[in-house]
Length: 266
Image (tube, rainbow, N blue to C red):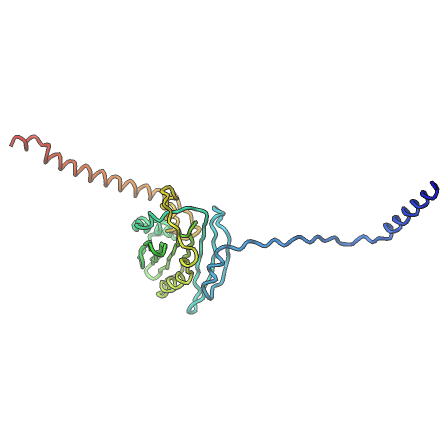
């Protein structure tokens, strides 16, 4: 019995060894991994609203992964118009500062940015001054920037406040008379209010809009320079000095009227 079991096991081992010896090793080994689809830029859903638009590039800004951008180009009347979008979510923001923006300060920020690029004094003319539309939750402006006597640039922005952040787009290109009309048409084509209406917060501790307002006044992707912050401090100091001066003047007038000893003697 023992000899029979030994023979059976020996035959089984010989069978296995023979198959292993005759088996062919594959020349190439391949592994199929599940496809990893790159997440779509959230802005892609919005730019599809605009016809004849060609997407140039998209991604997130180097200094902030939460800010998505998309650069595109629209062909109209035999010239190409560059359009840039910006989108950020998961932030609570207030519209308080936007309701009455400091137009003079925003003009100064825009000029500082372009003067640093051009290395010369420029001028800016508002086609539509910065303003906030309370019903459409829209902050926008359109400007002409004078580089020289015969060279102008068109710079416009529209920022929509959304439920958890903002969405905006801009045009920055050599000036053309019809660009302001195109900007309005494309702004309406986005239909922001129909998709993600802004939800106003009753919490007074929501994000302060002043820093966002400074960033929105210059082209998307640009960062505020030290001179910009210095200008902000200078503007604040001027307002403080003006307030102190007016207060001192009123106090002086009241002092001479009511507390002057000569007036009591008479």
